[in-house]
Image (tube, rainbow, N blue to C red; front, top):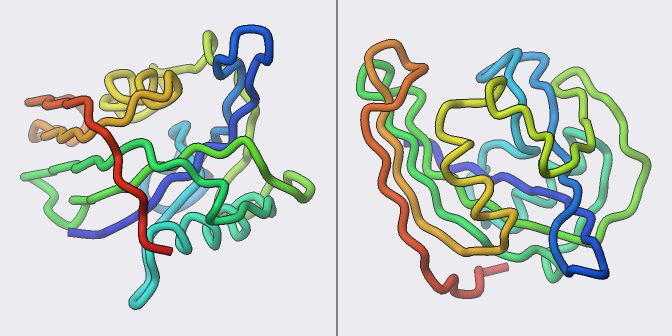
Length: 168
């Protein structure tokens, strides 16, 4: 099983203290090509999930985030019984703090989206089940098992939890 991260830079409506916009991306190459996805990728040997989130955000869209500003929000298991090489354990983080100039890369075309207009129909089938909770700042653990078509879900298990701090 691959271990990966997702980092969601967010904009917050100060009046309501709710997430108003989130940075997602259209995947241009590799796993998930053509889908709308979060910014992130694989954790390298000896790297923590936090450090991987920082590195992947910088590589994929040229934004700099700091480990101390990353809020751990989810641990997600994606099980593809008919394509085991796609199995992932993903740690997802939110951040309200970043620097740099958002840039399209060979891997992704980043796009800011209003939370109410996230195109879940263009994402992996699991996203509509967990991403609204994460954007609502509800820490979760979840597992998703895909059917033989590797596109539709066979099972969903989501649990709200208190997230522990992550190792830097």
